[in-house]
Amino acid sequence: MTPSNMPMKKATPSFAEPHLQVRNIALTLFAEQGYQSVSLRKLASALGIQAGSLYNHIASKQDLLFELIDEHETDLLDAIEASVRSNMKPAEQLLAYIRTHIDFNVKHAHRRSITQLEFRNLSPEQQGETLAIRNMQADILSNIIQQGIQQNAFNPIRFKASETLLLAMLNEAAFLVSTDGNTVLDDIIVSLQTIITSLLVRTPTSRRLAAQ
Image (cartoon, rainbow, N blue to C red; front, side, top):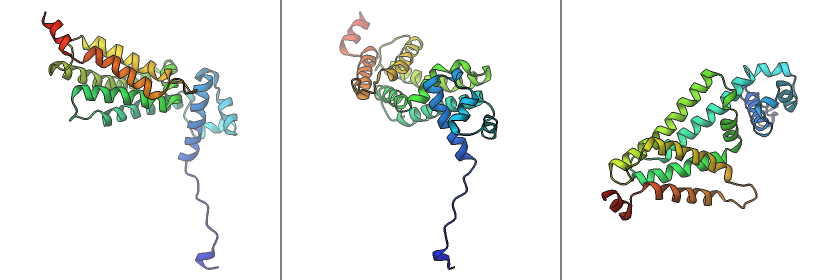
């Protein structure tokens, strides 16, 4: 049999492929049923394997949850860093931050859901690592606000309190986008951009009030 008509060999699945399958099924179950409601037996059943076989692919259910949450927070941080460029003005950076934060969380709804709702089920060490990434996300917003104030582009406000409020608004905004089409992603983004910029960005009126 010549090489041209020899049957092609099937590619041997790598370890990463079954692990990815476990992750995907777990993500759906955790998001739709809740982490505590999904036992290893239920996860294994959804995968069509024995519960004991799961340990060939994961260390524990909690480690699997952490992997999903850590990936989401890290990917969100990367997306924000890519969109908020240093050559932008503070107001432009603010708009980019808002759009990226909401858009990313909406497009990764299941990961967003478990990240916000199942954080409490992580170990203290895992929570610490997750919070460190969230703090880096918050630091970018804080730097934008500080730069805007220093450049006289933003109203002089208590930026730490504003940062906390803005992040809470951004996290909740993603939940407002409905699957029935009544609440459109772009409408939410533009509305929140308008609200936040009206609070922060200096206008001739706000400058006059500040001078009084």
